Length: 188
Image (cartoon, rainbow, N blue to C red; front, side):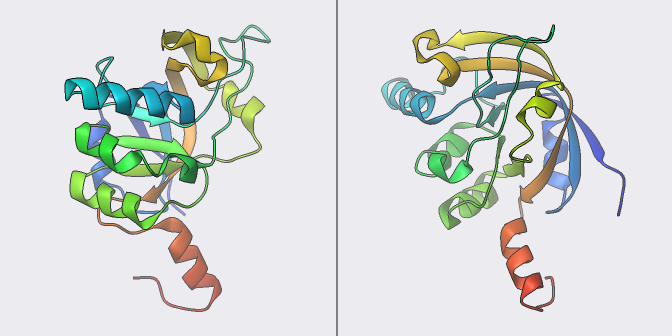
């Protein structure tokens, strides 16, 4: 097992393209939270203007809803949301310039194909560890849609948030590899 790769976003986002599925990554820097309600609004604004709003091109979306500040931290907890819930919008957002997404669980094949087509990656975070993941958030600021509460678009600054490459730019998918491995098939 190799050491985790440290990546600072958005500056090192291009380095994500070099990583293979299964690679552990420690993310630092800027990401934006976006769940279902935010996706609906982002896609509507994209359709209206033709560009991603809020300077989101070349950024990373984290499918999560941070809780209010607690324990002296900017967020009390932040856990990944099931990524498949965002699959209907993800290919369009990747085509518009999103370079990476973070969530939990497997994705639809359309997302895998979009990652290949646009050189994007899907990163998986551990579900059920929201309080621990919250300790990796050093700043949080609502950017848009404050009326959505925990589903608002929030800019986070991270410090070494642990994630794994779950879909790489070559289209290899961690969950499919795990299924094949448990069935005794060889890895590609």
